[in-house]
Length: 185
Image (cartoon, rainbow, N blue to C red):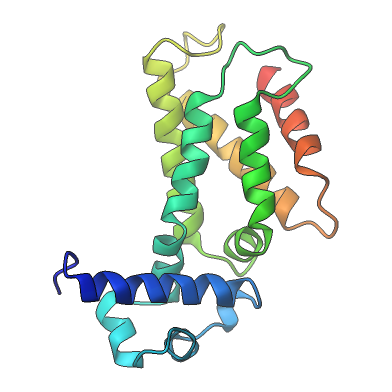
């Protein structure tokens, strides 16, 4: 299949829209390829031409939002005052809150390991890039850059997962401020 073909691009776009619609309504483990095909208005066999399973489709559908998370991490100033979360970090939590149903489904107990892995990888890469540019918090010169970046990416993913899958998630601004205090500690 030629992914540059406009027909393939349209089909993949419809499949991404369909999976995001479905995960906003139900748990990921309850979604079948047949349900995705029906929602997208295409043949079930066509889905398999593009994606091996529902999890791969979710990862692809969320690639843009994951990239937004990584961009926010990349531009977050490490030297911002400790008492107020930087605008980029607050925006990151607002971004997740606006897509809470999808993130809850993808990061929950029955979520997608591929999605969580992609998010962790991209955030780690964004942090490592910042650190290599000299924008690293002080006091960690004895820790390898990639280890430091992975540690912080894991912490962010853990906080986001705990927050978004909780029974009554706190406001995004509150979580951004809490994460920033932890990050600055």
